Image (tube, rainbow, N blue to C red; front, side, top):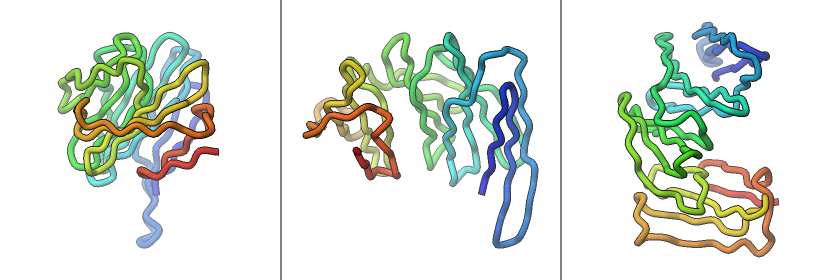
Length: 179
């Protein structure tokens, strides 16, 4: 179990293995700029890497931390970010660049444009390389799009019978519940 403690300008990442009753403080990160808050956390559990995004109204930063306590800031293509997700199988982070409206991957420090999002927003991807997006108009999600391997030729669109706000789409590893 990993525990995140968040205060206005710092966070601590701790590890606890209940089976072995092992507790460890992994890292402590603080930043001087006021107005930043933790806005997203993504875990690459098979690699034991935690990615943490901090943001204010103008800028986002992403930090990675592994279990041997290596902390580093990720070199990003943009400072205006949307959703992010870590790959389960390799040291790769996907994030939404809101300035260029592209899905970017950062693999071993190299940023690569993977997809022009057009009017879509990034939601999630699963182990079978199905990427999930949504289309939002006036704050309401009308459609969920599933794309195989970031290929526009393999799109499945799901029109929601009852459009919802983004806050009502919950992601449980590929199972979506819309309230």
